[in-house]
Length: 322
Image (cartoon, rainbow, N blue to C red; front, side, top):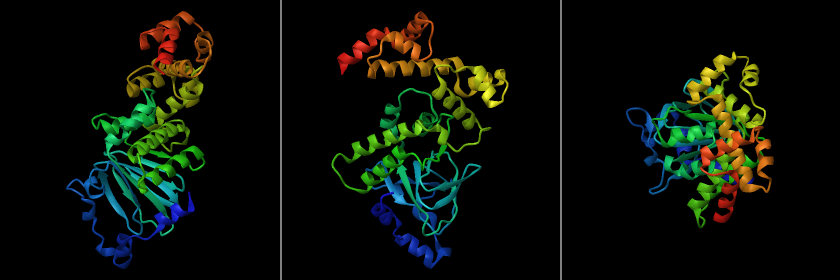
């Protein structure tokens, strides 16, 4: 992280000075905790803002709580230990933790050199990010859906170990900078940067720290396999990789995704074909083969069912719009 930025975030705050002087008198009421132990964003956000950052308060243990906003924690240096629902998570330098409203969260006491930034974000601020992610099935999109539509039964937290992913580190640092600095077009820059960050994280589901036997871990494994192998992917190979009976994998996919493995694979192949039609000059036949289809007429039927037109018409229409 930029040295000047880290130095600015490392300053001991008035709240932390008070804790150091008299730790027994620390009062969480300043966070607006209600009867359900939910932290109130109105105590943390300036009036009219939909995103704000604050350095994580060190030297004190934060007991179990929830939020009425979305929290994103970025570990600038050192480490902090969190418990989310029933999972113990150690955030190390460069890690990102996304927490939805329903995630039960507590944080162990941090030391002076354990510098983290907490983003307080209202759900509507993610609308641009959701548009940028599109309709592809992935855990980041699932998380955003759970943020914007609380009744959905999607993942409510994600832990990314991305310290070695330079684009992610650059984007999160840029986001911190734009929130701290008062620049023209601030909101638009912040929303676009957050969207780019979510897009980048969606490309690194292999950096998610989740238990493989959990539903979210299973979903991540399925989506990761399809993302990396969509051209030749098969349910048989996936089940063999997982060490689980193919019938059991198929049933679990249907239960967790609400569709079949074949549907997921088709969705990924068609979205990849859409991307290639929009962004390359490759022939339609070349694109069909490159996304994993041998039966050209079947691809044309699938594409028209989804987009309402043939691939060639889709490409021409997109170019005319541009």
